[in-house]
Image 1: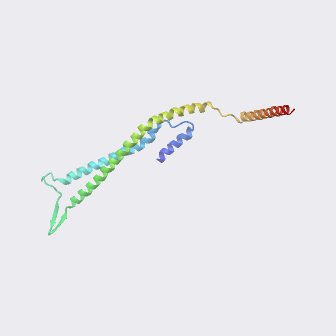
Image 2: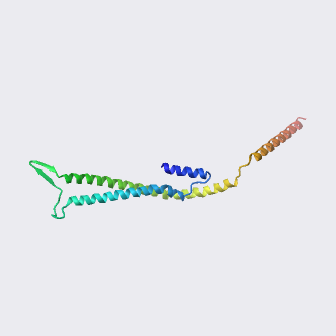
Image 3: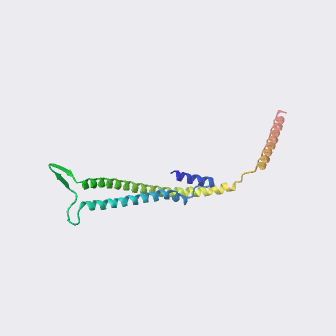
Length: 173
């Protein structure tokens, strides 16, 4: 978020009157989307690794029987160590699946928001161009021109006061 704000601030400092063009908006969001896909790829690769491990633990290919079972020692029944690893892997698999679903949902929401905002952004972009053109037409007067205008206005004020005073004198007579 701070990167996005700094990019917007730098654009504003370079072009204070122009709105941010819509073409730059995807660039601002691109890093978020790329990070999402990288995270999703990492989660999916971990998920496939865990699936491979669970398949490997589940069955002995040579004997054709399950490696996961319980070892009986005397009257006590203890879970096999690989069974404990499998349950931990399955819990991790569940958490990773939930995270993947949440990230996918979040990406879909962002895409929908972008699609909804796209017409508004284009409209604002057009308005920004119009305002930019109008602002470009306006030229800031120099100090000399402003001083001349002030003296003109003062002179017009004096003339107006003289006219008002003359009218008042004529009415009194």
